[in-house]
Structures are given as C-alpha cells and as structure tokens.
Length: 393
Image (cartoon, rainbow, N blue to C red; front, side):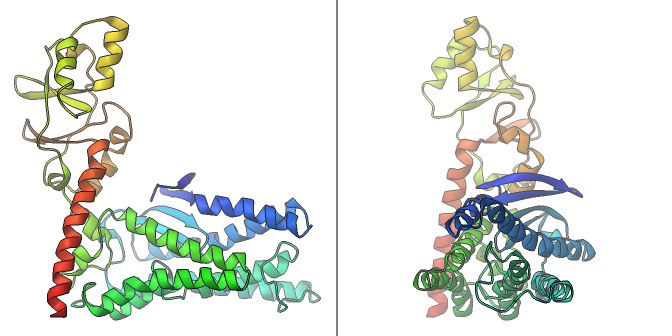
C-alpha cells in the first residue's frame, strides 16, 4: 500500500499514510474555491472537512478493529475511506460475520457524525439551509460539514470493492464453498470497475467534478488494495472455508516461490578486479560473499566499481557488507519483508540471502522480486482461468 502514498506519522503503533490523490484534491479544492470567488482559505477549509470526514470513520473502524482483536499495522487515507494493512492473515477479518461487522462500522460512524453535526447546526444556527443543492461547496462550509459525512456513508454502501458495501456484498454471497471463479464471484469482480466508470460517466454528464473524483477514487482504491496483497485473492478463495482476507493468499507465498536459484557468489578473498570481471558475465546486481562455503557478506556491483575508482584494487572482504538478514526457503514472503524491510529498501547490500542451515540456496533482490511476482501471478491466473473453464463446462 505504500505506492503513491505519503507518511503522516503513526498513532498507537499504526502507520498513517495519505494517498497522492487525496493530496491532489487539496489543489482541486483551492482551485474550485478560487473559481467561484470565495477565496483560497475556504478551499483549504473544504479539503480539511473532507479529511475530517474520513478521519472520523477511520477512528471508529480502528477502535472496532482493536475491540475485535484485529492487528492493524497501517492505514492509507483515500477520499472514500481508509485501506488497512493487517499484521497477518490471522489478524485480519477472516470470517463473513467479522467482515460484515467491520464493514458496517464505517458508514454508521459517518451517518452518526453527520446527523450529530446537523443537530448542532440546527440548534445553534437555525438560519442555515441544510437541504438546498450544492451540498459540498467551499461557500457553504457548515452545510458541507453535514453532507460530506452523510454522502461518505452513502457512497461506502455501494457494492463496489473495496468499499464497505463491496465487503458486505462479498461476505453475503461468497460464503465458504463459494469460489471467486464461480459466476457469482466473477460478477462481484466486475461490479467495482462498472460502478466506478458509471460514476465517472454520470459526473461528466452532470458536470459534477465530485462524482468524477469519487469514481476515480474507487478505481484507485481497488487497484491499491489489490497490489497490497501481492497476489490475487482467488488463489485462496478457491479453497472451501478459506478466509475472506486476500492477505492469507499473500502470506501463502514463500521465499522459495520467488527466490533466484541461479546466481553467482564471490569469494571473500577474491580481488575487486577479479570480481568485476566475473560481474561482467552476469545480470546480477548484488552478490553473496562466501568463505569456505559459508555466507559471510554481500556486495553490489556498484560497491565494487566505487571501490576500484576511489581506492584501487583490493579484496572483496574489504568492501562487502556484513550487515544483512537471512531467510529460510519456507518463510512467508510478506512476513519476511516486513521483518527486513530496511535491508530490502536500500540499506546495506539490498540482498536477502535464502539459506538452509549455513548453505545459501537462493537470493532475493529488489530487482528480481517484481519479476518473480509477475511470473507467479501470471501462472496463478492461468490456473484460475483453467478452473473457470472447467466449471463452465
């Protein structure tokens, strides 16, 4: 979920991030306020009200998650709500009943907060017209405070994934034993883009930029949540009784599934010039360093080049990094990457050696991980297509 989002800090151990599209709405709100001649300050206030509405529902959802014992690790704020990353498959909503309970919390919080604000405004400012058109506008901020919450609750009841309504729809129709490869499953998979495109088209016809933004947000949210799982949810959903959370499918991917097994190692006693000549015959960017068959370090091609340019020829052991973490072939890819994210993100040698005992059997690098996951996804999609064809027969 980190792609196209920015960190906002953390609260109670939960990482908070905001999606780029939400930031773009800030510029749109200011532009809209300037266009209707009400000043940039009201545009900023409008965006803050949008953020407040999302924050209210996500606070309610986070409290509910803690109450139900769910381990929330990160929340990405989007204009339609937050996308959650959980600590593991067992820490996410796994049963249809839990999925329904969590899906109802967000809309309920939005409706309650919107209704509460309407009551406060009608009590202390009864002259404010809350029902006339232009419900969300920088020149009617009190009205916007009410309607942005009510509309956010209503939008999230649409049966589009990953909105709350989509989760309710899925938990209702995809009971254990019903697969995503079934006709019902395929219908659910088509609903989200159809609803999003319908909103975008309706917004273009009605010249409503807000409706267009909602449609785009639904498309982005569905794509972002799909990417955060690394692999498709149907890989697990095809097993009767499997958890609804696609994170279970992601955690079923092991290091053995994506590691490079055809790789080159360097000897700690090799010279940098020898290492550079060997590197010229491989596509590898990072090399495990061994001594007597045991893994002792790692070094990148760029480290070798830099050392040769600055200090001349020396030995690999003098420039290798000894700061790295290893994984076993059967370890979960998702859990391992969380554990050693600093190493893979660019600290040290950007290498995760896969070892059995003290013997290195594979490596993971940022360069090969995406390629491996793409191939794995394609293989599983072909298997899923074969299952769907067999069911249609």
